[in-house]
Image (cartoon, rainbow, N blue to C red):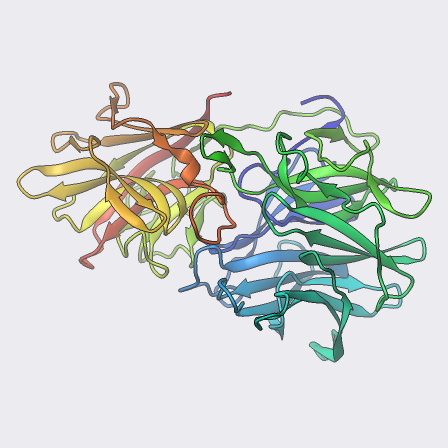
Length: 530
């Protein structure tokens, strides 16, 4: 890393919709998690350069019930704030993501510290998603979110709503007001007060290649708001070859020395014959911004495009390089916080790290197409040039019992290097693909492994290519089939709404309900460069 600079993305891999906050000398970044549990990871920094995980906020089922939610539904765009000595988190749980309806509930929780304890959730409204709070200088607090309109002949994004919140009553008061509408799609509202103006920061143009950030301002909180006459503050819609694409959805933070930074999402596409695809999903980046003499916000280095490298705050010295390789030997009594599960917490009835010391034991439950009870743990992929390796001890006795290594986008699209039982042959390894909802057992990937004591499994990502292999001892590797299309694990593939990113992990299924167990000794992700 260059001395005195921030290298983007600061949170690589699936870290969309960043919300940034400074309290004292500490900075906090919270991001969306959609159908993954626990919800809303937080990263902490003292310099905006080096970021460390600080746990998850929505780590209890009373805060987050995701059973049955659709792929890419769940927790959207959480927003952090700090007021009256407490941290506030407002977040959406989206149940329906198609058209014309968005069934969404918005909640508020508070805590004395970022690591809790967090309060019971307060229901706010269901009028639309992307909520945030603005705490004015007079002590009053205001909720913002978009208004969703399902009616035919009406814009679905029907404007930005503002309504006052009474902390003592734990309820919204007064009537919601529409403070801005726009012919372009606008969402993700956040309000800031600066030099006598109220500034409204907006995500515009959707979450894809047209994404951007737009500013508006008013002398009064309730409007009317005028749009920035120069248009988007940040976008890459007009530069398709730029390394950071889909830039948008941001929040501002000010350093103790008075410098301003913008946290925003962006994606790094892989070029394929079918066009660019963003396997790593939407990642968190930082840009330095300044205020002009006319009172508008601009990127400090000019233009509208996000930079891969920006100046760090004043006084920040060069520091350690962030480790990129990952290895978990499953020696701890509880699952490491970097792992996620689908739609519900890890519980002892299907996951244990103590029954067999130094091993992760998973008991099989439902299929990889289930929106309810999957025995799967995974972590975001952070590079498209890496090897993912694990070793499993699994003795299936029926074709309904499966275990292995998964390269995951969602229940409709994933690759699965799985070990199972075939009548008359014993244990057999092979690759299964669910391709935008269509299940396929890939030819030329089957390998008999009944005499292997353990089964080592590997996935190698090389840009848009994905290669699977297996070994009985971790030394002699057998390739399973040709290169596969890793770019299917992206927002940009298929016909469904997709908002997440690629994950890698391990899983077990027992479709007969006997809870067959598989033991994983370790899991490793090793960067290959490129």
